[in-house]
Image (cartoon, rainbow, N blue to C red; front, side):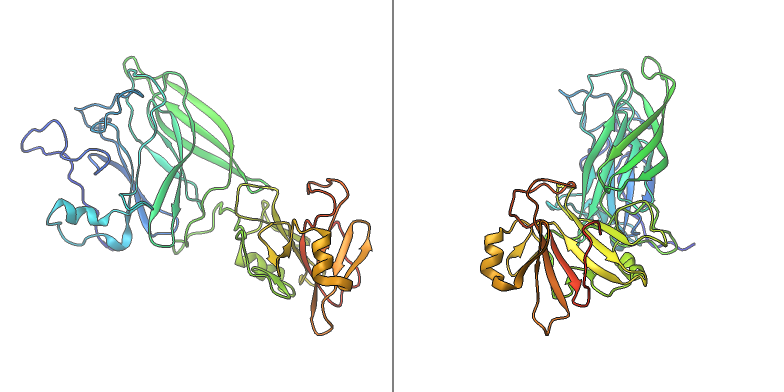
Length: 389
């Protein structure tokens, strides 16, 4: 083991017997209950259990009065900014904090959704899902809290609430996930257990088993050495990508299936040896938007397509009208089947683009008649193309 540094916090001033810590929960940690490295290894996340493990000032709360001296939260610091010496001031100590996108300290405090009650109201034990930037944790009277965090390219980190589960008169100390299912649409289903402890008039002394399906979480920016990918979310294509003669973004004709999968995780639970089609999500709120790669028997990519409106070449793509296609490509636009139009490339090109239209919404690709719904590429040597692919 090797010590690489520390993130300092003021804690409680025992020498003077002060009831309140010098800094409230929006500024510093009073009682550090737990700390973990993120999946990327670039940050450490710690819980501030002020008011729970240390009283006074206590940690009761209600929507009308948020007790910042008593209610804790999640705090993030940067590993590359840890100090290997004692800080000279509070400002010096706070330099280890990660910053959020707005420039403030990366701190998350759960919204208060209950009335004042006997149980405490502060952060407690948390669990990061392996391979994901998603946290499940017990928050006493605020039940189970699910928190996502995004590691931004500029080194900042943003917390965001992803969900919650608050039983009546809750006093939850732990909320732990024991099973994760990866769904074909990119979402994840989590099975968890929450322990509730009766303390005086608060709590229920129960064990709650729950199941929840949530949108895909943010992906870690890198992976800590020696760890596996865990339940890493799918690697979505960008809303706008560079489209060339043989590629739509990172999906490139002739590329092997193994290399394609390494460059970005597709949708679905796992990749089988016989699997010929890989589907990719596209960033944005619409889950029906997809990128698709089709492979031949030699596991080489033979067809690549997308129905994302931002995936266009020469201003042509999903949503383009047939009239616009005719105006742009003239006689090169040819009908090859019911509802299918192919744009034949020049003889020098090794690929051709393809657009498909439907007279009515079908197969989960809703569109108005005479509208292009996919941008595709197939090798010029291919004589046929199957719609089912």
